[in-house]
Length: 397
Image 1 (cartoon, rainbow, N blue to C red):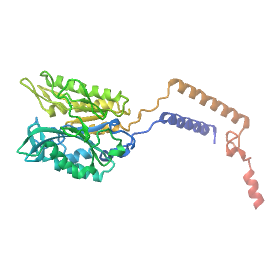
Image 2: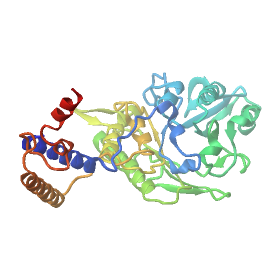
Image 3: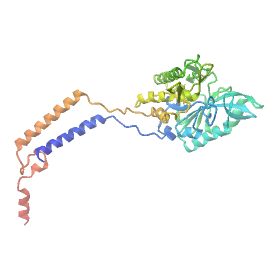
């Protein structure tokens, strides 16, 4: 090894050292399979300590009327895209629990929707679901009370439900559904959220008799008519404010439920759920919806592990198909930014390398040439004196 090669050798070692320092404590985030993302969460985690994508009026898809429709994905598609919180609104008609959105019938029954959830959990036993079940329409042509109709549907499948009124660990909920009960019933069956406030301007708290605490943001309609740009901006601020509130609360058994959905229908402005969530035209200008703004906010926070709670959305894959994934990623994220080497550290490293190079050069000069090559004494080539191999060949001959 001549002097030039030796210098190259030192430079390569230095570069490897710098790269090692730059990447130390750095771990690229592993892509998460959204169909089974909870499989990577420890059993000991309370369900309320997670960031969970959800949908508002989860079964309002395949609907023509724009002020009724809130989703474009079927329940199967929602489940596979990482959604784990479902907002089910029901009405009792002819003693059958049907899915509704306000007065509008959605053409499907609660039994058929639950069957989809059951099938998913059977094939994805690591996952856990949360269903908020609300009576959203008065009974019609029915002699069965709403609560009795619900229990008659759930009781044959109690192994698929967790009806305890406390916050479960993930180990207790895998393969099952936690009920948030938004209809009158026994207080010991499901987590009682019957005190849900209607359209409050600020987040509110429900504290159940069992001590379960839930903080909820569900400001879905402005108190005064707002132009679409102002309305979306105000709703996005509600959502982000709630995310920051959840992230800053160290009480991990306290639930945070954050609705990103909204609409308005008044004499001055008509903004559909799609307009608010995805975006819409305001005169000649396109207004980005809450979903895009939420996605951009999450991208700015990318790499930070945070608990943001449940985020219930309309059209969660529009216009950002990755929105649910961005929320899920906050359960696992590590800092993806490289560890930066300060200018002072670079200077010190350069001086150390210079000292090593000078010391190596002095050793080379002191030792002298070996077979016409300059090399330091600790290399194996310098341990062989000139002609040593030739002597062995002569003796062997």
